[in-house]
Length: 415
Image (cartoon, rainbow, N blue to C red; front, side, top):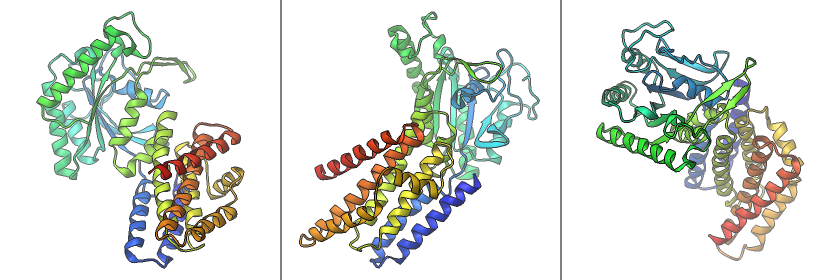
């Protein structure tokens, strides 16, 4: 982890140093540096997210953790309140600290939890936990069959927790409401994914969403979204998935990343076991790198921006490899670009040729040159996603590069 961040840090330092040397106006240079600072926050400064799970006992907090990671990491109690001491935990484990999670004793419990606990009430434990560490997001969990029960007290406590965090850490924590166990809604015999494919089941799911929307509005708690899910998953003795009935976990994971601060997104995308989420976030990353490459490529400085663009494309591949949880370094990135069949020397001459051909049209050379730099970077990014995240072969990665390069140019011409 540290070595990979060192790799990203070294590449970023090189790119920034090259930008600092460019003989351009301070305003243009500052515009580039602002984009690079945004990139640094998302990559070099990346940290683990802090996610607080709040809800009544039996609402499925531990089951959700298992579903998001695709492996059994937390004891799930089917009868009594399972989680004892409200505590920040590392997932998947202390030896592999990828995500910081606050799992707590359930609100509204009437039985003593099976684990040890310290504070008198669940609320006391949560207050202590959020005072010690600032949560990035609250996931408020409620069972689908309990959305019509009295949960005003639960939402009052959630509101109190948000106020404590704002007063203590000066941060307005976003909230996502998660409606769990939708598989138990009528009709009980329908246990197939997707659950909203059955008209009656969909009706009851929509009713549950409507009720929670009303409850949050009445409690005056800002809400990012309400997502119904099923997190039911069984494991065999070896920890392999034996039965999988998960639904909307990808959607929840996607919204979770959107809710997090910029510096917490990258490591979340890496840790969540969802190719859909990894691919979507990687596309966001590619868009950011492409925008910077286009900005730099548009400057009329023959050959001077070539090392910067090379560094940007190399860093982009390293970051995509990081999301895919694969060991990618600058050497691997260079070999990948070579394997794609992209001759950087020819690419440079093409860019300079474009500049020369349109030098008599004011402004046109900059736009076309920037578009070429952006198209190459965008194509490399899409190829890296295909190869490292989707696990496609090199021929398919080459095809992804060609299609993306062509698509980017066509969109630029249309715009």
